[in-house]
Length: 223
Image (cartoon, rainbow, N blue to C red; front, side, top):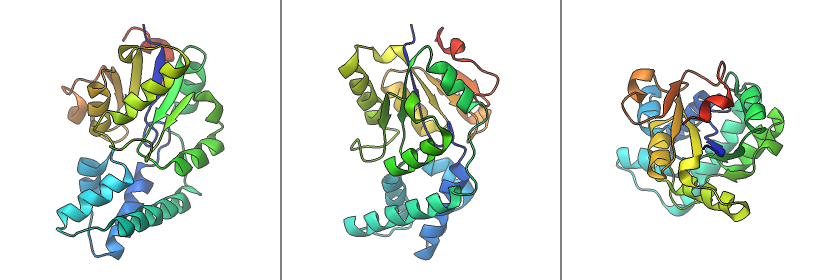
């Protein structure tokens, strides 16, 4: 029986992947590295900012120091928050789905976003109090597709009340996230907010939804 729902954040609750893409593109462009939208969605979606910059500089055959990497992450975060200040919107159905799910399941967020970004945006959506656990970038040593984030969320849930991985369902929008959930032993619903359905099917998702609109938490109980 499903007892908990763990949501990715970007592209699942908040429709902000375009802003993340633009922020990353602009920061990289300032250092002479070009990143197309297609490359972002194919290779960077689901990575946290640190892993994203490491990947971009690796592909550009450039080296990164720890200090400069921190500078890039901070610069991108500041730019992202500027972009979403006037363009923030939720994924269709997200607010209602979360509020309904909170009546039946324990809820958490597992994201590669920085905690200050999650906290800032959640406060504006009035959903903060719905989540028992939040795992953000920096809380675990490895980002998706590694399962560390989902395993950390499971550990946090277990500190309050025992729960098995198979009794946690994940809601994701990226292939990296799907891989992380499956590696953690959790069934995963994937939204097509970031990838077309043909890229998701056949990869082991427990379900593929176009958005949270038109779906109810009751559908998760049978997974």
